[in-house]
Image 1 (cartoon, rainbow over the protein chains, first blue to last red):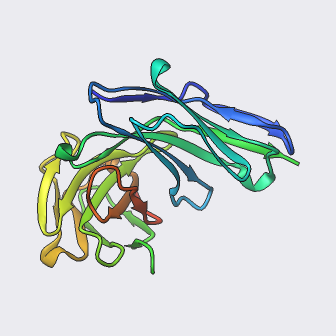
Image 2: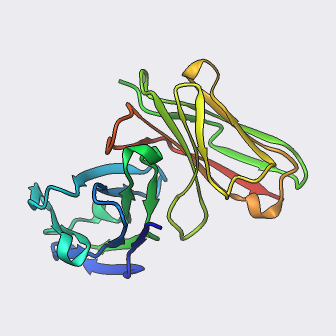
Length: 116
Length: 114
């Protein structure tokens, strides 16, 4: 069975602080995909990034960066110099192999509040 | 390229009534997914379609729930004899198909059962 754990339920920071959101996953598949989604108060889930299980190269995109470590089954997300507009719920998700339709298994989410 | 569209945005109904939600995926996306999200939780998979074929259903999808995707375009999700526990946000997503393609979500339909 697949499982995604986001141990941090809520994080509150002051604007311009760096913040890291943790994600730990479990799967028996050797091929899988990991995602981060953002859900602002308006409710729509916004896709941020995808990683496949064979690509452990970390990525930086503007103020966002992701650290994928297969050895610890973690896929952490860092926001540098946070802004008030970053306030949202962030979900980590795992997708299984093609044969299972690639349905997403989500963590419970981390509520990030960035205060001015 | 328009995004995933869901209708209605909100639905309030009395317990025992039937409700139907609609989802219009991104044009030419072969796969369409339904998820349910309750307050403070992540979305949970309900079912998905490859074109018009419903290929998988979660155990969460009781026999009061039915989904269709006629002609492989829009999809409907119907809940019969609604119960208090059905109150949730119902999310639709689509992607072109193929392993690992990101799913693009609609704004969701929030269902409230009185």
